[in-house]
Length: 420
Image 1 (spheres, rainbow, N blue to C red):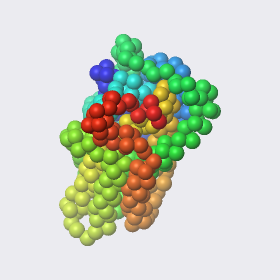
Image 2: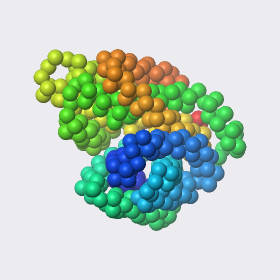
Image 3: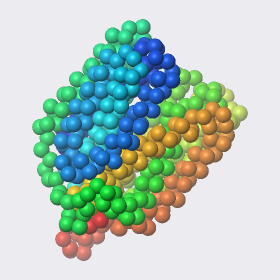
Image 4: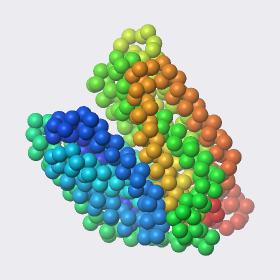
């Protein structure tokens, strides 16, 4: 598990190392224009949407480790070729390979965490994963920003070469991992790809969780670097330095509060935790509305905008030990890879649609933008409460289910995934 967490941190470090500077690299350093730079960012999302439906079955059939190693090798190749690309075709092809590799890493690593944990330790494991991912992204972005120089293409080539080396280092590191147990597919589980997707769609709780997940990622993560930042600059008059402070506040809250929040979350129903996140984010959007539509001073607007990002970080810290373990507990034995990939697909779809909707709406109609996403946040609360009615006690509140079994003198509770 320690090696898996190191892998998570390093893969996030690699992302933070280069992704924030892709636009500048393509549009200005390689002089390919803003349109090509925008297409490169879109290619990342498209590549993820293409490969993720196949990644789940590959993880189920081959195991998460071989799939992870292949994804790391693809990401290393894509990163190195991107640093050497000089024309639009090679840049787009390289971005597609890098985006596909990075997309597959997420469900593969998540499945390895599931295989290396129990229902008792899973929430803490995913909380630590989220903590290390944010730390890796922040540190990677900080270091990468000091290495690049827009006047020297060689500095970007070095940046992408270092990222490729990190991925190759991860190949060596993760090759030494021995997963303690890799559950076999239970007898009633489908063997073909289409049948497994049909079975997943018949799992009403998983379908509801996927819808809820789409709204979560669309209304929060999909707005961070597009709609919300555009709203802050256009409507609230926020400076770029204040925007940077807000992003830093988001990461700081996650890093500082993650394990304190974990103790609060572990003893409560997962559906109620998600519902509470919806309310917290609704408050965050209301504060953002004050920042851009109120009549206070610029200092008050800046403070409100930073508070918005901080509240989003608090909600993220509450979700990290909740969503991923719930996906694992809903999956039949041996099908965690399929379910993780399906949920990652939902996330990527929301992250692709979110900026496309939020960015133009925030710039043109700031007041309707705030109202729309405030209502989306309240919708998260409603959807979470409805989801709770479909979950078993062991799925919704594993800690309570285990303590109830012990109090009744029964055997230790089995993982919920074995009974889903």
